[in-house]
Length: 67
Length: 67
Image (cartoon, rainbow over all chains, first blue to last red; front, side, top):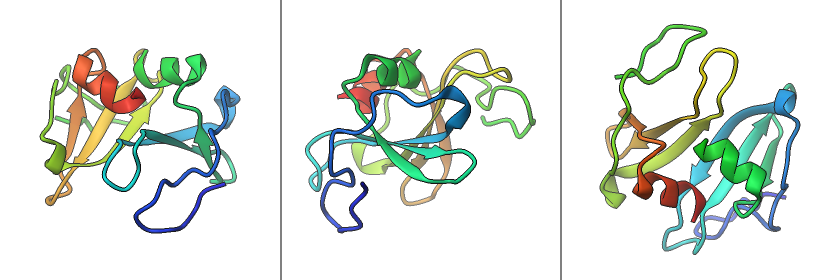
């Protein structure tokens, strides 16, 4: 559910609230900017390398990126 | 100040509390794991592509990755 459009938000919906720890690879955070008015958090899943949007308002996600 | 050692924390010191918005490229978050007992936040700077550790406990950094 990632858009490929330039100059817009990357995630179409609010994203996942939780992902299995063992499936969790890299996490990329895209700070809000002129092209998207809120932070976006995108996880790369193991082993497929699939990219999945995470919900920045989820308690679990917040803990993952700050704890 | 990134170590290249496999199976250890990537950041040697606590990292930067703030980075100029216009120098801020991608932000990668490495959740705590068996190889590093705390979350690590690594920014790629523009235009050089230099990687810089950010301080997960800095208010500004937390705002960047969750707001």
